[in-house]
Image (cartoon, rainbow, N blue to C red; front, side):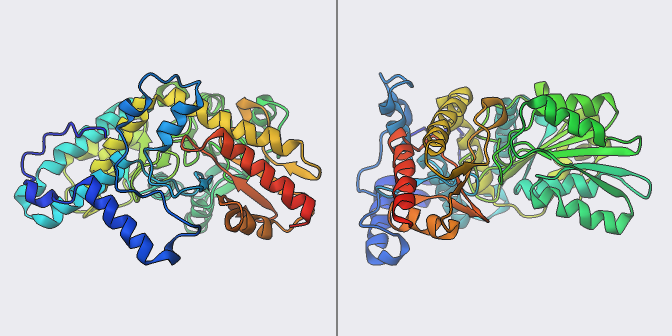
Length: 444
């Protein structure tokens, strides 16, 4: 496993007596005793822990499918499960999962102020890692709880009133749409919506739609980077540049791009960016990231102020994370998540995710009656694949994919969504296409 490089001077061995091997044995026994917890014949939990990532992939080229089977071995995924639901929730690799367990045990073993003092330093180390991963300065990174909280920090903290306008994409996630609507009713500002074509011909078509929607009263522009409902990837850098030229604050909802795409926020040029660790980042639950550019922080007040507020906090994005008691174990494990991404390489993570998603799209596009809502163009798509399964009931297709074929996706109204990640194989992509083809043949 990836070794913990933090100096944890005050966790005695007695606080961490459950080794990885004994933990997995106990987990496997629990699954066996309570079989209703998992579907299928067996789970992948075994008495033997996997090799660390470096050893597992040693001597294997990323172009070789064996490399990605080795990456998959870093996850506690049950046998034969093709989990393609990264747009909703990802499993964590062993280094992250075990870090959560380890530090939770430490906190429960000794919840004193003295023992917990180290977590302030660890949080700063995690912030530095996250800043490095995202191409930002540590003072621009707030470690919050999820994308929704990050989006709301901006929609609540940015001062708007009667006569002001906010420009939103009609593909925005509810946390970046409904939240603005509620605040518009309260404070009297107006919301304008940009209608984006389902499958645009090119980026210019999207840019033109936004350009036509701006008015002199527009103060904020926000869009979801990768749509969870169509899979459309927006030209973030160009949209943010257009907003900056007009003096408009830009918020990019990165729920479906953080951990999936190689992100460089300095290059993207947005004023704010949000993300959740539990999705494509494959991190711990209830940890998120909010980036606010240094020269834009004065425009966004903190939405929550609690114990821990100090004047110096106000001089950085840390002012957005003074949220009261946090899960220090999860925050610590977030640093392990950055390590995992960097050991594979963010560009390689993106390339693999695109490879598997493209294989699924190409396979589905050849099936009679299947209608893709996601562009085949790399510039306009990422890892979210949305399709209508012909005349079949999408709810039945979604259910049978899991119950019969052991493929976990999502139902999206009249559509089905598959969102694969680095723990998926090309064989699983073929399985998904074959499953849909058989259901079309059999009428489900």
